[in-house]
Image (cartoon, rainbow, N blue to C red; front, top):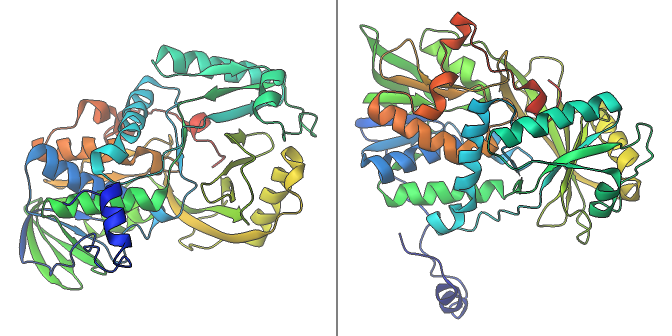
Length: 414
Protein backbone atom coordinates (compact mmCIF):
# COMPACT_ATOMS: atom_id res chain seq x y z
CA UNK A 1 0.00 0.00 0.00
CA UNK A 2 1.54 3.27 -1.11
CA UNK A 3 1.36 5.90 1.59
CA UNK A 4 -0.32 9.25 1.14
CA UNK A 5 1.85 12.28 1.88
CA UNK A 6 2.24 15.96 1.03
CA UNK A 7 4.84 14.94 -1.55
CA UNK A 8 2.46 12.57 -3.39
CA UNK A 9 -0.22 15.27 -3.29
CA UNK A 10 2.12 17.84 -4.89
CA UNK A 11 3.45 15.33 -7.43
CA UNK A 12 -0.05 14.36 -8.59
CA UNK A 13 -1.19 17.98 -8.63
CA UNK A 14 1.28 18.69 -11.44
CA UNK A 15 -0.28 15.88 -13.52
CA UNK A 16 -3.83 17.07 -12.95
CA UNK A 17 -4.47 14.23 -10.46
CA UNK A 18 -4.76 11.76 -13.35
CA UNK A 19 -2.27 9.17 -12.08
CA UNK A 20 -3.47 8.21 -8.62
CA UNK A 21 -3.53 4.45 -8.10
CA UNK A 22 -6.95 2.83 -7.46
CA UNK A 23 -7.69 2.79 -3.73
CA UNK A 24 -8.67 -0.89 -3.85
CA UNK A 25 -8.92 -3.70 -6.39
CA UNK A 26 -12.03 -5.11 -8.06
CA UNK A 27 -11.29 -8.85 -7.72
CA UNK A 28 -13.34 -11.77 -8.97
CA UNK A 29 -14.97 -14.07 -6.42
CA UNK A 30 -12.95 -17.24 -5.89
CA UNK A 31 -14.40 -20.67 -5.14
CA UNK A 32 -12.91 -21.03 -1.66
CA UNK A 33 -11.77 -18.85 1.23
CA UNK A 34 -10.51 -19.42 4.74
CA UNK A 35 -12.85 -16.73 6.08
CA UNK A 36 -15.81 -14.94 4.50
CA UNK A 37 -17.28 -11.82 6.08
CA UNK A 38 -20.79 -10.81 5.03
CA UNK A 39 -21.14 -7.04 4.97
CA UNK A 40 -18.66 -4.47 3.59
CA UNK A 41 -19.55 -1.77 6.08
CA UNK A 42 -17.24 -0.50 8.80
CA UNK A 43 -17.44 -3.59 11.00
CA UNK A 44 -16.95 -6.10 8.20
CA UNK A 45 -14.01 -4.22 6.66
CA UNK A 46 -12.37 -3.59 10.06
CA UNK A 47 -12.69 -7.28 10.96
CA UNK A 48 -11.03 -8.28 7.68
CA UNK A 49 -8.23 -5.76 8.19
CA UNK A 50 -7.41 -6.92 11.73
CA UNK A 51 -7.61 -10.58 10.72
CA UNK A 52 -4.98 -9.89 8.07
CA UNK A 53 -2.77 -7.43 9.95
CA UNK A 54 -2.84 -8.92 13.47
CA UNK A 55 -3.54 -12.61 12.89
CA UNK A 56 -1.82 -13.22 9.56
CA UNK A 57 -4.90 -14.58 7.77
CA UNK A 58 -4.98 -13.33 4.17
CA UNK A 59 -7.35 -15.65 2.30
CA UNK A 60 -10.41 -13.57 3.18
CA UNK A 61 -13.42 -12.30 1.24
CA UNK A 62 -15.75 -9.50 2.27
CA UNK A 63 -19.09 -9.72 0.46
CA UNK A 64 -21.74 -7.01 0.15
CA UNK A 65 -24.99 -6.94 -1.79
CA UNK A 66 -24.41 -3.23 -2.40
CA UNK A 67 -21.34 -1.00 -2.26
CA UNK A 68 -18.61 -0.40 0.31
CA UNK A 69 -20.00 1.60 3.22
CA UNK A 70 -23.40 1.91 1.57
CA UNK A 71 -25.43 0.71 4.54
CA UNK A 72 -25.48 2.06 8.08
CA UNK A 73 -21.82 3.11 7.91
CA UNK A 74 -22.81 5.77 5.41
CA UNK A 75 -26.10 6.59 7.15
CA UNK A 76 -25.28 7.89 10.62
CA UNK A 77 -24.34 11.07 12.48
CA UNK A 78 -20.61 10.27 12.91
CA UNK A 79 -20.57 10.45 16.71
CA UNK A 80 -17.53 8.86 18.40
CA UNK A 81 -17.73 8.49 22.20
CA UNK A 82 -17.24 6.05 25.07
CA UNK A 83 -19.35 7.50 27.92
CA UNK A 84 -21.19 4.25 28.74
CA UNK A 85 -22.57 3.27 32.14
CA UNK A 86 -21.68 -0.40 32.64
CA UNK A 87 -18.02 -1.54 32.96
CA UNK A 88 -18.27 -3.99 30.04
CA UNK A 89 -19.61 -1.32 27.68
CA UNK A 90 -17.23 1.38 28.92
CA UNK A 91 -14.16 -0.85 28.43
CA UNK A 92 -15.23 -1.86 24.93
CA UNK A 93 -16.18 1.59 23.65
CA UNK A 94 -13.14 3.28 25.20
CA UNK A 95 -10.95 0.74 23.44
CA UNK A 96 -12.71 1.81 20.24
CA UNK A 97 -12.19 5.51 20.95
CA UNK A 98 -8.48 4.91 21.62
CA UNK A 99 -8.19 3.11 18.28
CA UNK A 100 -10.01 6.01 16.61
CA UNK A 101 -7.49 8.45 18.10
CA UNK A 102 -4.67 6.79 16.13
CA UNK A 103 -6.65 5.51 13.15
CA UNK A 104 -5.57 8.17 10.64
CA UNK A 105 -1.92 7.44 11.34
CA UNK A 106 -2.32 3.65 11.52
CA UNK A 107 -4.21 3.42 8.22
CA UNK A 108 -2.51 6.39 6.51
CA UNK A 109 -5.93 7.86 5.70
CA UNK A 110 -7.43 10.95 7.30
CA UNK A 111 -10.68 9.97 9.05
CA UNK A 112 -11.10 13.59 10.24
CA UNK A 113 -11.53 12.78 13.92
CA UNK A 114 -12.52 15.97 15.75
CA UNK A 115 -12.54 15.49 19.54
CA UNK A 116 -14.76 18.45 20.23
CA UNK A 117 -16.67 16.81 23.09
CA UNK A 118 -20.18 15.44 23.54
CA UNK A 119 -22.36 17.48 25.92
CA UNK A 120 -25.51 15.93 27.42
CA UNK A 121 -27.99 18.40 28.93
CA UNK A 122 -30.17 18.09 32.04
CA UNK A 123 -33.52 19.91 32.20
CA UNK A 124 -34.77 18.96 35.68
CA UNK A 125 -33.26 18.34 39.09
CA UNK A 126 -34.07 14.65 38.81
CA UNK A 127 -32.38 14.43 35.41
CA UNK A 128 -29.37 16.33 36.73
CA UNK A 129 -28.95 13.86 39.59
CA UNK A 130 -29.21 10.98 37.12
CA UNK A 131 -26.53 12.56 34.94
CA UNK A 132 -24.30 13.04 37.99
CA UNK A 133 -24.70 9.34 38.75
CA UNK A 134 -23.79 8.45 35.16
CA UNK A 135 -20.81 10.80 35.15
CA UNK A 136 -19.50 9.26 38.39
CA UNK A 137 -19.98 5.73 37.07
CA UNK A 138 -18.18 6.64 33.84
CA UNK A 139 -15.26 8.07 35.82
CA UNK A 140 -15.09 4.91 37.95
CA UNK A 141 -14.91 2.95 34.70
CA UNK A 142 -11.76 4.91 33.84
CA UNK A 143 -13.38 7.09 31.17
CA UNK A 144 -13.28 10.89 31.20
CA UNK A 145 -16.52 12.57 32.23
CA UNK A 146 -17.18 15.99 33.72
CA UNK A 147 -20.31 17.58 35.22
CA UNK A 148 -20.93 21.15 34.02
CA UNK A 149 -22.85 24.06 35.52
CA UNK A 150 -25.26 26.22 33.46
CA UNK A 151 -22.66 29.02 33.35
CA UNK A 152 -19.99 26.65 32.00
CA UNK A 153 -22.41 25.27 29.41
CA UNK A 154 -23.40 28.76 28.24
CA UNK A 155 -19.73 29.67 27.83
CA UNK A 156 -19.09 26.53 25.80
CA UNK A 157 -22.23 26.88 23.63
CA UNK A 158 -23.14 30.61 23.46
CA UNK A 159 -26.00 29.95 21.02
CA UNK A 160 -27.81 27.64 23.47
CA UNK A 161 -31.19 28.83 24.76
CA UNK A 162 -30.73 28.20 28.49
CA UNK A 163 -34.31 29.25 29.32
CA UNK A 164 -36.10 26.98 26.87
CA UNK A 165 -39.43 25.31 27.65
CA UNK A 166 -37.31 22.89 29.69
CA UNK A 167 -34.58 25.17 31.14
CA UNK A 168 -30.99 23.88 31.10
CA UNK A 169 -29.97 23.16 34.71
CA UNK A 170 -26.62 21.52 33.96
CA UNK A 171 -25.16 18.55 32.16
CA UNK A 172 -22.07 16.46 31.66
CA UNK A 173 -19.47 16.23 28.92
CA UNK A 174 -16.94 13.75 27.62
CA UNK A 175 -14.28 15.98 26.11
CA UNK A 176 -12.41 13.17 24.30
CA UNK A 177 -15.55 12.36 22.35
CA UNK A 178 -16.47 13.97 19.07
CA UNK A 179 -17.18 13.21 15.43
CA UNK A 180 -15.29 11.74 12.47
CA UNK A 181 -15.98 11.26 8.76
CA UNK A 182 -17.97 8.04 8.31
CA UNK A 183 -17.16 7.41 4.65
CA UNK A 184 -13.45 8.02 5.32
CA UNK A 185 -13.50 5.32 8.01
CA UNK A 186 -15.01 2.79 5.59
CA UNK A 187 -12.61 3.73 2.79
CA UNK A 188 -9.59 3.63 5.11
CA UNK A 189 -10.35 0.09 6.27
CA UNK A 190 -11.21 -1.04 2.73
CA UNK A 191 -7.92 0.31 1.38
CA UNK A 192 -5.88 -1.19 4.21
CA UNK A 193 -7.58 -4.60 4.00
CA UNK A 194 -7.16 -4.69 0.22
CA UNK A 195 -3.45 -4.00 0.62
CA UNK A 196 -3.18 -7.24 2.64
CA UNK A 197 -4.83 -9.18 -0.18
CA UNK A 198 -8.40 -9.27 1.15
CA UNK A 199 -10.95 -9.65 -1.68
CA UNK A 200 -13.74 -7.09 -1.33
CA UNK A 201 -16.59 -8.27 -3.55
CA UNK A 202 -19.31 -5.65 -4.08
CA UNK A 203 -22.81 -6.32 -5.44
CA UNK A 204 -22.62 -9.94 -4.31
CA UNK A 205 -25.64 -10.90 -2.21
CA UNK A 206 -25.61 -13.91 0.09
CA UNK A 207 -28.72 -15.98 -0.60
CA UNK A 208 -28.13 -18.89 1.74
CA UNK A 209 -25.73 -20.95 3.84
CA UNK A 210 -24.36 -24.43 3.32
CA UNK A 211 -24.37 -26.12 6.73
CA UNK A 212 -23.26 -29.72 7.29
CA UNK A 213 -23.78 -31.43 10.66
CA UNK A 214 -24.25 -28.08 12.38
CA UNK A 215 -21.05 -26.61 10.91
CA UNK A 216 -20.67 -23.92 8.26
CA UNK A 217 -19.36 -25.22 4.94
CA UNK A 218 -20.00 -22.40 2.50
CA UNK A 219 -22.32 -19.81 1.04
CA UNK A 220 -24.72 -19.44 -1.85
CA UNK A 221 -24.37 -16.05 -3.50
CA UNK A 222 -25.65 -14.25 -6.57
CA UNK A 223 -22.19 -14.80 -8.06
CA UNK A 224 -22.12 -18.52 -7.34
CA UNK A 225 -21.38 -20.95 -4.52
CA UNK A 226 -18.22 -20.66 -2.44
CA UNK A 227 -16.76 -22.77 0.35
CA UNK A 228 -15.43 -21.27 3.57
CA UNK A 229 -13.94 -22.57 6.80
CA UNK A 230 -15.40 -19.71 8.81
CA UNK A 231 -18.07 -17.06 8.16
CA UNK A 232 -18.94 -13.87 10.04
CA UNK A 233 -22.16 -11.87 9.76
CA UNK A 234 -21.81 -8.06 9.97
CA UNK A 235 -24.86 -6.69 8.17
CA UNK A 236 -26.16 -4.08 10.64
CA UNK A 237 -29.93 -3.59 10.22
CA UNK A 238 -30.44 -6.89 8.39
CA UNK A 239 -28.95 -9.17 11.04
CA UNK A 240 -32.18 -11.06 11.74
CA UNK A 241 -32.77 -11.64 8.02
CA UNK A 242 -29.31 -13.17 7.63
CA UNK A 243 -29.50 -15.33 10.75
CA UNK A 244 -32.88 -16.67 9.63
CA UNK A 245 -31.18 -17.95 6.48
CA UNK A 246 -28.75 -19.80 8.75
CA UNK A 247 -31.60 -21.39 10.71
CA UNK A 248 -31.66 -19.49 14.00
CA UNK A 249 -33.26 -16.36 15.46
CA UNK A 250 -31.78 -13.40 17.30
CA UNK A 251 -33.69 -11.06 19.66
CA UNK A 252 -33.52 -7.83 17.69
CA UNK A 253 -36.06 -5.33 16.42
CA UNK A 254 -35.25 -3.46 13.20
CA UNK A 255 -36.45 0.09 12.66
CA UNK A 256 -35.41 3.28 10.90
CA UNK A 257 -33.28 5.87 12.66
CA UNK A 258 -33.57 9.23 10.94
CA UNK A 259 -31.13 12.11 10.61
CA UNK A 260 -30.79 15.25 8.53
CA UNK A 261 -28.37 18.06 7.75
CA UNK A 262 -28.77 21.76 7.05
CA UNK A 263 -27.10 23.93 4.46
CA UNK A 264 -23.45 24.70 5.38
CA UNK A 265 -22.62 27.75 7.49
CA UNK A 266 -19.49 29.12 9.14
CA UNK A 267 -18.24 27.32 12.31
CA UNK A 268 -20.50 28.19 15.25
CA UNK A 269 -21.14 24.94 17.18
CA UNK A 270 -17.92 23.71 18.75
CA UNK A 271 -19.29 20.62 20.45
CA UNK A 272 -22.04 18.07 20.00
CA UNK A 273 -25.13 18.88 22.08
CA UNK A 274 -27.64 16.22 23.14
CA UNK A 275 -30.91 16.50 25.06
CA UNK A 276 -33.07 13.53 26.05
CA UNK A 277 -35.94 15.62 27.41
CA UNK A 278 -36.27 17.87 24.38
CA UNK A 279 -35.18 14.91 22.28
CA UNK A 280 -32.53 15.86 19.79
CA UNK A 281 -28.78 15.96 19.29
CA UNK A 282 -26.84 18.25 17.00
CA UNK A 283 -23.29 18.89 15.84
CA UNK A 284 -21.57 20.78 13.02
CA UNK A 285 -19.75 18.77 10.37
CA UNK A 286 -16.39 19.60 8.81
CA UNK A 287 -18.36 20.85 5.79
CA UNK A 288 -20.26 23.35 7.97
CA UNK A 289 -23.61 21.53 7.97
CA UNK A 290 -25.66 21.25 11.16
CA UNK A 291 -26.18 17.51 11.64
CA UNK A 292 -29.42 16.75 13.47
CA UNK A 293 -30.75 13.47 14.82
CA UNK A 294 -33.26 12.13 17.36
CA UNK A 295 -35.05 8.88 18.11
CA UNK A 296 -35.81 5.77 16.13
CA UNK A 297 -39.18 5.30 14.46
CA UNK A 298 -41.86 3.64 16.58
CA UNK A 299 -42.55 0.80 14.15
CA UNK A 300 -40.55 -1.97 12.50
CA UNK A 301 -39.26 -0.99 9.07
CA UNK A 302 -36.49 -1.61 6.54
CA UNK A 303 -37.10 1.63 4.62
CA UNK A 304 -33.95 3.74 4.35
CA UNK A 305 -35.76 7.04 4.09
CA UNK A 306 -36.98 9.76 6.38
CA UNK A 307 -40.49 10.98 7.08
CA UNK A 308 -42.16 14.35 7.52
CA UNK A 309 -43.54 13.89 11.09
CA UNK A 310 -40.14 13.09 12.62
CA UNK A 311 -38.52 15.82 10.54
CA UNK A 312 -40.92 18.35 12.06
CA UNK A 313 -40.26 17.04 15.59
CA UNK A 314 -36.49 17.17 15.14
CA UNK A 315 -36.44 20.66 13.70
CA UNK A 316 -38.81 21.92 16.40
CA UNK A 317 -36.55 20.47 19.11
CA UNK A 318 -33.46 21.99 17.49
CA UNK A 319 -34.99 25.45 17.32
CA UNK A 320 -36.11 25.26 20.94
CA UNK A 321 -32.53 24.86 22.09
CA UNK A 322 -30.71 26.68 19.28
CA UNK A 323 -33.16 29.28 17.89
CA UNK A 324 -30.40 31.03 15.91
CA UNK A 325 -30.68 28.23 13.33
CA UNK A 326 -34.29 29.09 12.48
CA UNK A 327 -33.44 30.55 9.04
CA UNK A 328 -31.37 27.59 7.88
CA UNK A 329 -32.59 25.35 5.06
CA UNK A 330 -32.40 21.58 5.24
CA UNK A 331 -30.15 20.01 2.62
CA UNK A 332 -31.13 16.35 2.92
CA UNK A 333 -32.72 13.74 5.15
CA UNK A 334 -32.08 10.01 5.41
CA UNK A 335 -32.51 6.94 7.62
CA UNK A 336 -30.43 3.93 8.60
CA UNK A 337 -31.85 0.58 9.73
CA UNK A 338 -30.87 -0.17 13.32
CA UNK A 339 -31.11 -3.55 15.05
CA UNK A 340 -32.05 -2.99 18.68
CA UNK A 341 -31.62 -5.72 21.30
CA UNK A 342 -33.70 -5.90 24.51
CA UNK A 343 -30.80 -4.45 26.54
CA UNK A 344 -29.46 -2.07 23.86
CA UNK A 345 -26.13 -3.93 23.88
CA UNK A 346 -24.68 -5.62 20.78
CA UNK A 347 -24.54 -9.36 20.05
CA UNK A 348 -20.98 -10.48 19.32
CA UNK A 349 -19.29 -13.85 19.13
CA UNK A 350 -20.26 -17.42 18.30
CA UNK A 351 -23.65 -18.64 17.07
CA UNK A 352 -25.45 -22.02 17.29
CA UNK A 353 -23.78 -22.91 13.96
CA UNK A 354 -20.17 -24.02 14.37
CA UNK A 355 -17.66 -21.55 12.84
CA UNK A 356 -20.40 -19.02 12.10
CA UNK A 357 -19.95 -15.75 14.01
CA UNK A 358 -22.06 -12.65 14.46
CA UNK A 359 -21.54 -8.94 15.08
CA UNK A 360 -24.92 -7.23 15.19
CA UNK A 361 -27.64 -5.71 17.31
CA UNK A 362 -25.70 -2.44 17.49
CA UNK A 363 -28.73 -0.21 17.77
CA UNK A 364 -27.46 3.37 17.57
CA UNK A 365 -23.89 2.53 18.67
CA UNK A 366 -22.47 0.76 15.63
CA UNK A 367 -20.41 3.56 14.09
CA UNK A 368 -18.49 4.48 17.22
CA UNK A 369 -17.68 0.79 17.75
CA UNK A 370 -16.16 0.06 14.34
CA UNK A 371 -12.46 -0.19 15.32
CA UNK A 372 -13.05 -2.18 18.52
CA UNK A 373 -15.72 -4.29 16.83
CA UNK A 374 -13.31 -5.25 14.08
CA UNK A 375 -10.42 -5.85 16.48
CA UNK A 376 -12.35 -8.06 18.92
CA UNK A 377 -14.22 -10.00 16.23
CA UNK A 378 -10.95 -10.70 14.40
CA UNK A 379 -9.53 -12.16 17.62
CA UNK A 380 -12.70 -14.18 18.21
CA UNK A 381 -12.76 -15.63 14.69
CA UNK A 382 -9.03 -16.36 14.57
CA UNK A 383 -9.01 -18.10 17.98
CA UNK A 384 -12.58 -19.46 18.00
CA UNK A 385 -12.87 -17.93 21.45
CA UNK A 386 -14.45 -14.64 22.51
CA UNK A 387 -12.12 -11.70 23.02
CA UNK A 388 -12.07 -10.71 26.73
CA UNK A 389 -13.77 -7.38 25.94
CA UNK A 390 -16.83 -9.09 24.41
CA UNK A 391 -17.20 -12.18 26.59
CA UNK A 392 -20.42 -10.73 28.05
CA UNK A 393 -21.88 -9.71 24.66
CA UNK A 394 -22.75 -13.23 23.45
CA UNK A 395 -26.16 -14.64 22.58
CA UNK A 396 -26.18 -16.80 25.72
CA UNK A 397 -26.82 -13.76 27.93
CA UNK A 398 -30.46 -13.77 26.80
CA UNK A 399 -30.85 -17.35 28.04
CA UNK A 400 -29.34 -16.76 31.48
CA UNK A 401 -30.66 -13.21 31.97
CA UNK A 402 -27.22 -11.54 32.23
CA UNK A 403 -28.36 -8.44 30.35
CA UNK A 404 -26.32 -5.23 30.09
CA UNK A 405 -28.91 -2.45 30.00
CA UNK A 406 -27.40 0.54 28.19
CA UNK A 407 -30.68 2.16 27.19
CA UNK A 408 -29.81 5.39 29.03
CA UNK A 409 -26.44 5.61 27.26
CA UNK A 410 -27.78 5.14 23.74
CA UNK A 411 -28.21 8.88 23.26
CA UNK A 412 -31.74 8.66 21.82
CA UNK A 413 -35.04 7.08 22.72
CA UNK A 414 -35.93 3.68 21.26
